[in-house]
Length: 471
Ligand SMILES: [Zn+2]
Picture (cartoon, rainbow, N blue to C red):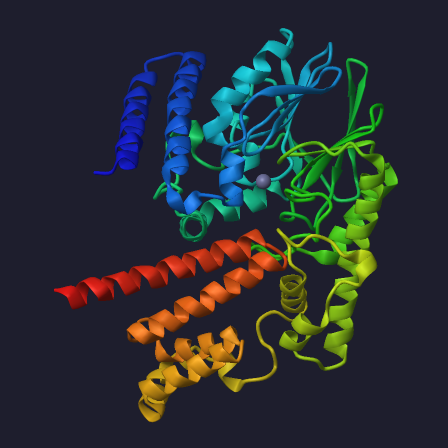
């Protein structure tokens, strides 16, 4: 049994025992017992990640290594740092939270924020959206009279994310192999189950004043899902943006997610950016990483993100109307120099594909077979028999030599995942070449996660073949 697994097992045993015992306790004692158990689980998860070589150097590992502590962003406004930040806005008539972090980090974030609560009750929890890293602490923080404020679409997003949890978990674990094998299912830690008491609709901001502080909540669809809201404090001109901008600012938006969530809407996103430009924030506080306080960076970044999104969108529309193929548009559409933005999270060519499929869905009006459930894979073995595996490997190598690793991969895909040693070595070389190119161009973290996953897979097959040959 590996060390990591042992920690994990001990963590879950402790949790199971605590959960078995807590049913005899009062609700508040039960909650604090669960928080204690959760803290242990969180420590186990961090140790697991820190010791897994596949996490090394990845963006995800950077996030998990962010120390959890409270910092004061402005008078009476505190941020608990972590994988995702939780924010506390204090007032003399009750406190407000914006986002509640990842469940495994809740105990430490609560501990960091508690000294600043000032004995006030928690009047509102505002959730930027339904992703697990933004609502994990909600059930732990929630008091009897706490209002839970979300977008009107929150419950629908939470529903599909809950119902498809095994599918998402499997995909996430493929990209982030250091994650636990199964999602946490026990008690308050389990994903979902948040019941909003106040919902915000698109175009109808929800406003309230409390202890002299004005709160304005705007529904801004089109970003990470359909249920994004942001919190605006007009007196201080601070915008709490959740994941509206993603983990970087500015950047080309992620209107596509490799995890396989629902389509994101580019026109709505650009319109939502217009709303923020109108607010003219002095400080943007995203729920990942640090606040942005440079006014000129904020102003130029907002305009560039809006214009770049519209530029790509309009170029896809023009291309569709002009009869160009989706693949051609993925090559043709690039950002002009004045709109150049980092593509470490969102990528222009993937946005092109997303926008195309957002409008046209999956039928590309091309191959008849697209309409039926018999895929091209079903005749690959025939093609291999006709061409001969040796010739196909030679062809793949020629493509590699020509600097076209993607064509090499197409040939190798027809050959099938398991091919001979030579095919596997070529496949690894093609993937490595793509990885080098990915790092040298946009350094897109999802592209890198995916290529690393495929490289690990080939390497495992290669070493299985080597040990078979040795026997
Ligand atoms: Zn997030």
